[in-house]
Image (cartoon, rainbow, N blue to C red; front, side, top):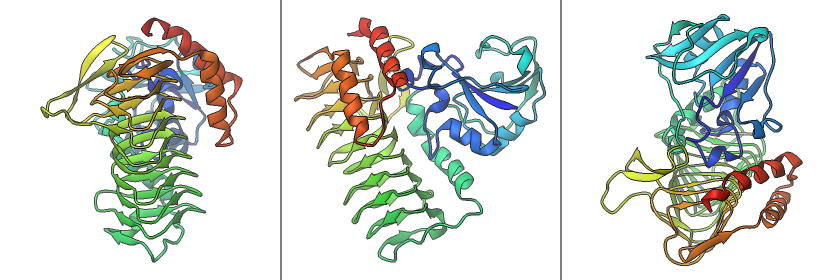
Length: 396
């Protein structure tokens, strides 16, 4: 048996984050969705995604394959219902297709996730469903994902000892430190949710953290940081200043003063010192943001929405991002004033205008940045960036 996480027609709806990964590889809480599925089922997990991503994110085989909506968070109830499916059945909630079960020999082409295939027998699901279908859903659902992952990762295990030099507000049992984690002279508040500190991660002195909060393996919270949950920072991130309700996929830096709120950053991003994002309009109205699927600005349904940034993008010192700004992959944003609310991939500039960021220079920068975290830019990584450069050229 195996689990196949399908993009479910959401690739364009979750851009720019899915330019470089399948929907099921997004991090919402402590874990990526795929990692959570693997830990909850102990089954091989693969992806049904865009063809150019398949070399890095392969398919999976098995006698029985359960193909799952890639944006579906694996809570215990929904995982149990999907594992109970028999070949030829589909799990459905209020007409929404969540998963299908097929024999490995009889697998169909990618189903239309907007409707339930007629050849499948429907099984109704009545529990809670959490779906990630737009970029802002990641920070919106971050708290639920952290709580789910916290139980999954810590149940039956003992935390490393928390130094007595820290101040704990709330339930100390909701703080979990993996091996090698260091937290000193900080204030940790679990009143609203748990706090998870990954292996060899560090929270430096003077930091103030309110849960739900997750810090990935090898990541750092800088001295005096103020972090409001729900927030999740993947492995090797660097986080400082004031941050609220933000998800960073991993290996990204916001190491200096400045505000980042209600935002999502991909991997290998870097925000220069005193970069600030607006997450609330002066009118207190609904924030609009660029949608690649509609090729237009669309309502987010959110009063608070800051910055959505794709992998390998950067901002210079004192950069200001307006509410609902969407930055593509390998963009370099700098200079005074507010840049546009949609900055295409491989753009170089700011409020005074942009030019194309050369592919060769972008790949070389990515190689240098990744080497600082002892990660090699693979041929697969380079091929993905080359593809994104080509398909986004019309936007520049």
